[in-house]
Length: 277
Image 1 (cartoon, one colour):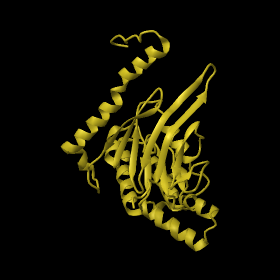
Image 2 (image 1 turned 90 degrees about the vertical axis):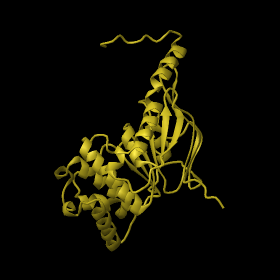
Image 3 (image 1 turned 180 degrees about the vertical axis):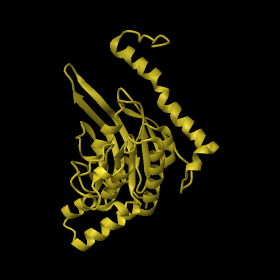
Image 4 (image 1 turned 120 degrees about the vertical axis):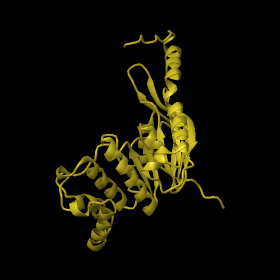
C-alpha cells in the first residue's frame, strides 16, 4: 500500500487585512512532501515562502484550505514540528548544552536521557568542545549548529527551516550546508527549507519548489536527480549547473510576470526603469 505524504498542503489560502483590502499572501497552494524528503522552497520576495512555513508550523492559521501532517490537521504549534529561523533564537544565559537540553526538560525526560541525548547531538554538530560555552562566545555558524542540535534533540517528525544560513558569510554557509546534509542523512527527518539562494536550494534538496508572487502560489517543482552524499565539488558538475540554471530561470523570469500583474491591478502600464537607475 502506498504511504501517505508526511505533509499535505491542500488548496491553502492565507490573507492579511490591509486598510482598503485584504492582501493575498497564498492563493490555492497545494503541495505534498514525503517522509524523510528534503524539500527547498525558493521564490522572489513577497511570494509567501515564510507564510507557507508558518502555517505548516502552526504559527499562522490558514484563511482557507488545510495542512495535514501524518494525516492530522495542523491547528497550532507542536514539538513534532521543529522550527529554525535565520535568527538563532538561543537563550543567551544558557550554555550550549543547556540550550540543547531545554526542550528535553520540558518534555520531562529523565536526567540521564536528557544528558545523553544532548551530548549525542552536540557531538553530531561538532560542538563538544563548546558544550559549556555561552552563545556570546560562539560564531554565527556555531550558534546555528547549536540551534540545529536543539531542534533535533526533541525528535521532531519534521524540521521547518526559514533561511537559517541567510546571515552567514559564504564559506560558513557552504560548510553548514554540508553539515546539515550529514545530519539529515544520519538522523532522517523530513525537512522543508526556505532560501533565497538558488545554489543552496539545488545542493540540498530532493526537490526544489519555486513559488511565484502576487498572489503567492507554486510556479514549478523541480526534481533534483543528484546522488547523496553530496560534496562541495558537486557544484562544478554540468548537471548541477543545468539544474541551477533551470531554477534560476524559474525564479528570476518572474519580474515580467510581476510587472504584468501591476498593470492589471492599477490599470496603468508599468514604467520601465531607465538605465543607470
